Image (tube, rainbow, N blue to C red; front, side, top):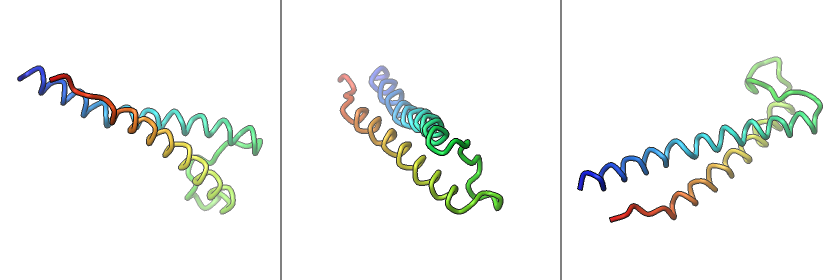
Length: 85
């Protein structure tokens, strides 16, 4: 019983950690893609007053889509994982 509880705890921890890591990696990749397309680095803080609206919106949408899709893909993959009984 203790092993089953540990397996479920580890799976729950993985369910929180792995999607976050995937989203972080996806945002980094999106930043490189943004740099290739725009020839500038993505804004560190899109809400900063010195960042133009167009740049802030473009980066927020691009990074949000890429990170969200990565998180969704990992969550769906993890949803198929079964705890041995």
